[in-house]
Amino acid sequence: MHAHAAPHKPHARLGDHWTLETLEAVARGLAIVELPTEARHRIDRSRRLVDDLARRGDAAPNVYGVNTGFGALAETRIAADQVRALQRNLVRSHACGVGPLLPREVVRAMMALRAQTIAMGFSGARSVIVDLLIEMLNRGVHPCVPAQGSVGASGDLAPLAHLALVLIGEGEAQFDPDGHGGHVMPGFEALRAAGLLPIELEAKEGLALINGTQLILAVGALAVRHGERLCTTADLTGAMSLEALEGSSRPFDPRVQAVRPHPGQEETAKNLRALLADSRIAESHKDCKKVQDPYSLRCMPQIHGASRDTLRWARQVLERELIAATDNPLVFADDEGHGEFISGGNFHGQPLAIALDAACIAIAELANCAERRIEQLVNPAMSSGLPPFLAPRSGLDSGFMIAQVTAAALVSENKVLCHPSSVDSIPSSAGKEDHVSMGTISARKCAQVATHVRTVLAIEAMVAAQGLDLRKPLESGSGVRAAHRALRQAVPTLTEDRVLYPDIQRCERLVDEGTLVRAAAAAVGPLA
Image (cartoon, rainbow, N blue to C red; front, side):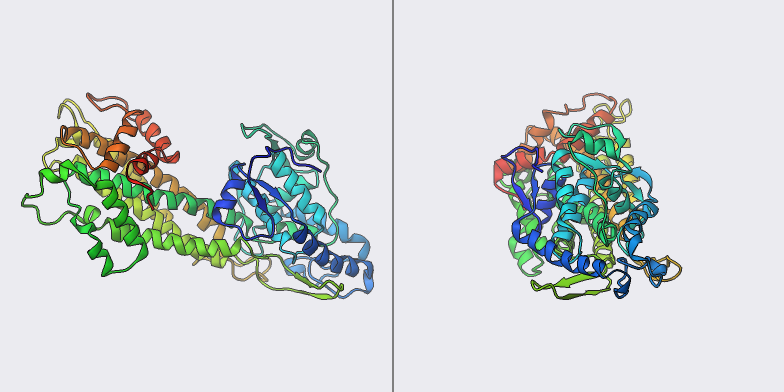
C-alpha cells in the first residue's frame, strides 16, 4: 500500500523520538507517517512470540488477553479456536463511548499514537495493523470516536474501541482525503472509498489496539501546545494593556528577574521588555506620582512565568509518553525468538492525569490575570484618565462594559473546570481495576480551558487596542504598536456602540492564527 499524500510534507517516523510538534503536525495533516525498517523489525520480533504461543493451542500457558478473558475475567481460559472471536468481541463490546465526537485533529493524533506505541515493539501485534493505521491517516479515513466513556486506566478503552472498529470494517468514519471535511459513513465504506480493506484481528491484536493512553495523550498534547502559544499571546496582550493603562516597565528589569531565577519568569520579562521598547507612552508619564502598578500588570513575569514553567514540565511528561509502550501484557522478545509476556500497568494514565490537571491550572491563570487587566481598562477609577468602559460617548454608549462581563464568565467557568480529575477514582471491572486516573477528563478539561483562555485574551487585545487609540498621538512600544496595527486591519476602532460579538470572533481568529504575535515578532525579533 502506498500513501496518497503530498511528497513535500515532512515525515514522522514511527518508533522514533517524537515531540509535541511532531504529533501536532500529524494531527493537522502536515506530516506523513511512515514505518521505518527497524521499527517493523521490532514489531515482527514481538509478533513471532505471540504466533508461537497461538500455535501451541490449548497446551499454551495462560497469557492475559491472548487466551484468557479481560479485566475481572482474566482467569477465564479461552479455547484456541476462539482466539480470533475473542479479539473481535473485545473491540465490539468495549465500543461504549458517548457524547460529542472528538475533533478530526484529536482522532488523527490518536491513530498516530496507537501506531507509535505498537511500533515500539512490545505490543505483539502484526505490522499490518500499523500499515493500515498509516494508510488511514495518509488517505483521510478518520473513525468517529465519542469523547466520553474512558476512566483513564486499562487504557482509553471505549474511545480506542471505536477507533479499532473501523479497522475491522465496522463502526463509523469520515472519509476526508483533502482535509476539508467529510460526511459520516459506515467504517467499511470509508475504507473502500480510500481504496483500503479491513483486517481480521489475530491473537492479542484487539487488546493491542485499545490498551493505552492514546486519547489522554492526544487531547492533552494538543491542549498543552495551545497553552504554550497562549503564554506568548498573554505576554503581548498584557503589554498592550500596560501601555493603554500607562503602566511601568520597570518591574521587568533584568536585575529583578536575575535574583529570582525561574526560567519562565525571565522569558516573560524578556518578551515584555522587547514589546515595550521605545514607548512614547511610557516616556510621557515617567515622572508621574504613581509608585506601583496592580499585580496583574507588575507581576506578569511571575504569573505568566509560572504558567510557562508548569507547561514545560507537562511537556516533559507528555513527550516521555510519546515514546512509551502502554500495552498490557508487554511482549519482550529477542531475535532468536525467545522472550516472555509480562502483565503490568503501563496503561494507567496517572502520570498524564496529574500533569494535565496542573497544565489546566497553568493555562487558566493566564485568563485570570488578563480579565483583571480588562477590568482596569474599563473601570474609570483605575484606568488613568480613560473614559468609562472606553465608550466614545459615555452614558449614551456602553462601550466594552459587557466584553469584560463575558471575560469574567469564562474565567469563572475555568475555575470550576480546574478542579483536579486525578484525585478521583471509581473502581471498575468488578473491583479488579480498583484505582483509575480519570486522565481523559483532565485532558478534555485542559482543552476546554485553553479555548476559554484564547477568547479572554482575544477580548483583552480588542479592549486594549481601544485604550491605545485613546492615548494617541502618543505611540506605544514597537512590538505593541505592530500588534495594534495588525488588529486594526481586522477590527476597526469603536466610534459608537455596535454589535461586538463579530469583533470578538475576529480577534479569536487573530489569536488562533498567531497573527498578532507574528506581527510583534516581525518588529522586535522572536518572542519566547
